[in-house]
Each structure stands twice: as structure tokens, then as C-alpha cells.
Image (cartoon, rainbow, N blue to C red; front, side, top):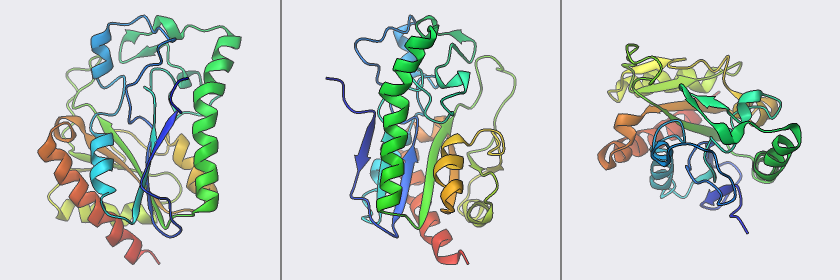
Length: 242
């Protein structure tokens, strides 16, 4: 039997902090064949590099719990609505994913096996143990393969949609900590925010969407720095939210 499509670190608690890492794993089930070069499973198209180790470090603080995706974003992209074609990507950063060219029945099976159980369990956890703050944790590549001349100088990005209060506190905090911060960069939460729209904004739970640059989040020293500062940021933001 395949492992469940999520991992939980720590014990969920009411009024605590919850880290959500939709793309924390690059695991591929044995019975799914994507038809890609295996080396791509270590690249950014397969997962958000650095998210899992940073989450593990942060959850050493007992106020934090982490809910992490258990499979590669190439199997199913948990930060997409299930009706979005990109939920099972046929292409990523210029690379074709032949094994994701699925008929409707195959697509339905994939969503039922991975996408729905993840979001159903997360919804249940939030109902049982409503957190004070959600930290949505992602990472981004310094440059896309398909756009190599478009450098991304930001060390960390802050994303949000309609709920801005927590992010507007987080941005100056991160700048004061020495980061080059992208406000709605390299992506905008107004466009790409499916998990937070569903689980945070729909439930009026404060959240901060964080994108860590992968050349920094991929090293142990960078992971330790991100974990230390993001943990402090969550405490600070929670204390200052009106």
C-alpha cells in the first residue's frame, strides 16, 4: 500500500501555528510512470527544494505543526484546484510529462487518490485545531529553465490574496532580518493561491505565503537561517495582528 498523501510533523493544537507545504516531497508512487528523466526528480519542477527540512527545524518549537504533501507536484499539484488542468501537469518549465497525458477516468483516479485525501485531511485538522496563523511554505528557483535570462534577485517572497494584514507585518520583519524581499514576487498570490484561498481565506484564518529562494533553502546553513527567522516572524506577526 502506498504511503498516505501527506505527512504531519508535531501535534496539531488550537491557537498554534500550522505550516502547510504542498510541494514538500519529490516521491513518486511505484505504479506511476511519468516518462521523464529520473534526474528531473531532484529539480524544482518536482518539488519545492528546502521546504521539508525547514519545516522540520521550525517544528522543534512545540507551537508549530507541519502538514506536508507526501508526493511530487508532478504526480498532483496540491496548490491547484482539482478542476485546473495544471493540477496534473502535462508540462513544467519546458519539460513534457508524458505520463500525465491522462484520459478523464485516469485523471479522476489520480485526483481521488492524492488530491482529495490531502485537502480533506487538512480541512478536518483546521476544523478540529484552528491555528492562530498559517505559514504556507514554498520555494522558487533563481531562474527558470525556460527563461534563463530572467534573474530572480529576491531571497524570499511574500504572497497573499484578499487577506493582507499578516503579510504586511511579515514583509518589514523579513527586511529587517536582512532579506531581499519580494512583495508578491516571484509570483502573485492574487493569481496562484489555491490552497490558501480554500483553507485560510475561506475560514478567515490569518496566513503568510512564503517563497524561499532555492539556492539558499537548499543548504543546511540556509535552512537553519530560514527556520530561525520564519519562526520568529510567525510569533511576531501573531502578536501584532489586531
